[in-house]
Image 1 (cartoon, rainbow, N blue to C red):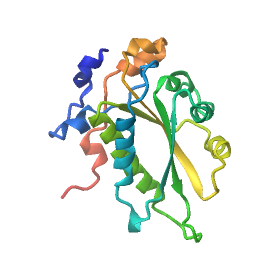
Image 2: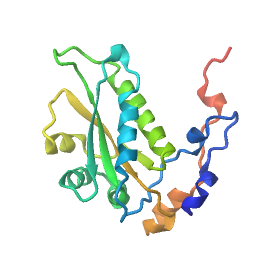
Image 3: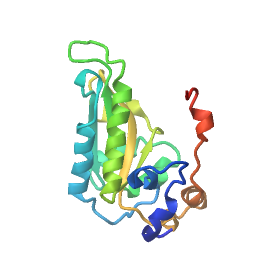
Image 4: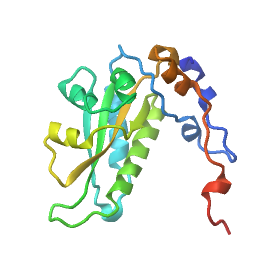
Length: 197
């Protein structure tokens, strides 16, 4: 797949939505010899910062590591299965973590939801500026916590690969190439909307 034909991956929606939402997808093939654009990466983090949160608690925390750094290597070492095969070519890895409790020990029951909103903002801003992201749950959260000496109230939830899109063939693995080029599918609205009156 050519990076010039990214719109070929656009979602076939039942109702028109914003192009940046329809065109966003989660590739695994990143340009391995390209340094990440720092301004675009900063804009994605800034978008996450301005996401909404319960009581404006802003429970999100991020570890941002560029390819070639010790921090990147530490995060990459925690990735599970296929994630460890392809994610190393990304320009950066971003650990998204949340505060399980506030500074005084008060519970933050909506923190994971708030972090999800922040990462949605991150991914849309990144895509709008020409970066691509792929968020992973397959990693060892305890190992990340230990590697970065995180306090117990902060819990890693996901790792996101960020970078410039490369052709699927650059993955060099038939299984990964097949996943990269498979049709995009979603459940029909009739399965996900329980009540619509």
